[in-house]
Amino acid sequence: MGENSNANLPPGFRFYPTDEELVVHFLQRKAALLPCHPDVIPDLQLYPHDPWELYGKALGEDNQWYFYSRRTQNRSTSNGYWEPTGIDEPVVNSSGMRVGMKRYLVFYIGQGPAAIKTNWVMQEYRLSASDSATTKSSKRKGHPKTDYSKWVVCRVYERNCREDEDDGTELSCLDEVFLSLDDMDEISYEGGTKTF
Image (cartoon, helix red, strand yellow):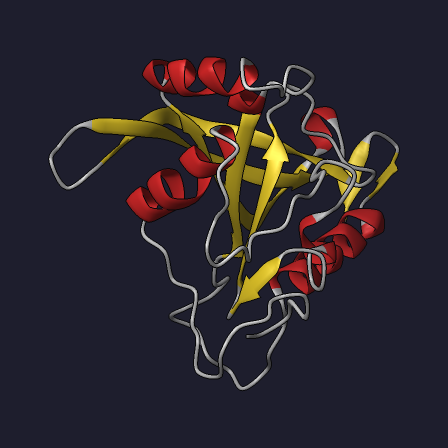
């Protein structure tokens, strides 16, 4: 099943859940302290990890990684941070009822205005506010320590850098970022002007 060796699944299994399936069949069950079958998405504290470090830590299928994480405002890693983009989108079920929310985030290398946008994207799924009743009832059943309404399920992937260009050279998007950093180092100031 790709990169996650912890998944004990039959041969031929592929994990391509829809937004609705991630929220309804995985995240809602986790928040309600119900078992998920199959239990394949691991818990992972995302924010100490850069996206390229997810290999072997999260459930991987092709170039997508899935994991549960605690919802937090600090989305920094040792090499960069995740920045939200746009507005949150509703996740609806087949009946048209909102069951959760989806937020897109992009990974930046560095800090502040000098940070460089990468092609790493995270979709962070959370439950709607109306789902908090499910977690309140689970707290009364002897699970008062952890607020499971703070869980999110994440899908992380790297967008193709140059889908239209194919010169026979294969560079990952991360390689391109590091090459651009090298180019920035070559820029120097002589007498107040930039030289290349």
